[in-house]
Image (cartoon, rainbow, N blue to C red; front, side):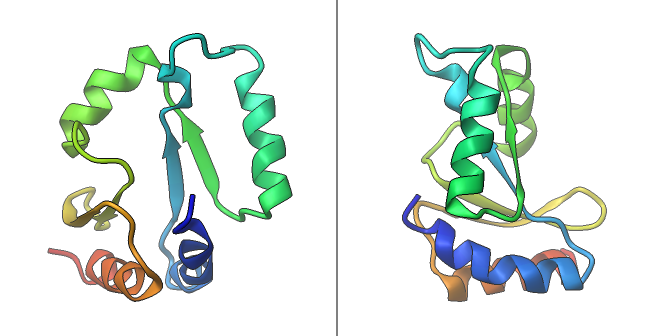
Length: 112
């Protein structure tokens, strides 16, 4: 959460360059999660914080496939730079700052 304001600062440049920025939430994987209410709760939270990018909620059906595809079994947060061909060209595990988000964006735009 602490890094999101800096990611939000970079997101407009990403969009203007034709790139997408989105979040991926593990909240459905938390024991006792309210599966039916969580999408509405997340939408209200994002609106309150004025996030202007999509956050995808994934659940148990997606968990293993997404983790395997993107190597996400490690530290949270993790930020991935994915190029136009769908290849991960850079990653940052742990909190990042605006400068690092800019670097990740540049790598995604330039490709591997």
